[in-house]
Length: 302
Image (cartoon, rainbow, N blue to C red; front, top):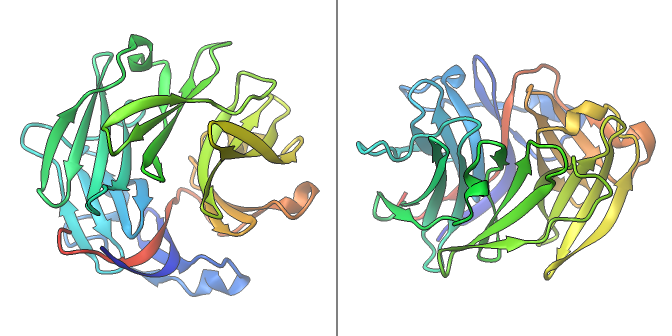
């Protein structure tokens, strides 16, 4: 399906897009490589949504059209259709990249319009969209439900769902790619209902960071074991407290993680360290968008 190389961090700022090796030594800030998105795509005109393998999914800020991009080969694929499929609306929609059982790259797009969620699946091989069944319970369609973008693990695309209502808690759903069905999964049990979950893959296992306990945030790291969650790391009174609300977290190495906030600040979290030493800035600057990907020569369908 693909040939993989190095793990890289894609940084898209206002004026340029660059890539760095995911080691984050001090010298890395000077080893960036500037890369063009496309001849007719500017850095300031796109959002970074998600990544998988060597692919990064972007959307245009103006038209909301979706793009698949391979930063290594510079190949860009515009996947929106004339029937308005493949148009991403910020704060309403969610996407998830994955590989099908037949080793084909696919994209899920959960699209919310007028209080109703509809699921579409894009095939990179066929270059076409297909409407799928969604969760029947109407509460998951409500605008109070904030869906994360998907994380693919062992045949399932997982989505966290944050409920913006006091006492409502959080949910976790998985889209099983072999049956094309959503199934509910347990969410890590914390002592507060205001938690914010970020899924990551660590040592080939699904983990979740959960920040909870406003205004004195605690940060837990949980590992999924079958249908249960095991807490493996805790950090009390995380500093800065507010940064873990609405962030994107990626694995860097065994015990180090990359955190890119919605405001565009890039920090590293090292769970082998204690106190304020566990959390520190990686890049200077702000208003960055980021994604971690593995340099990959894609198959012929892309």
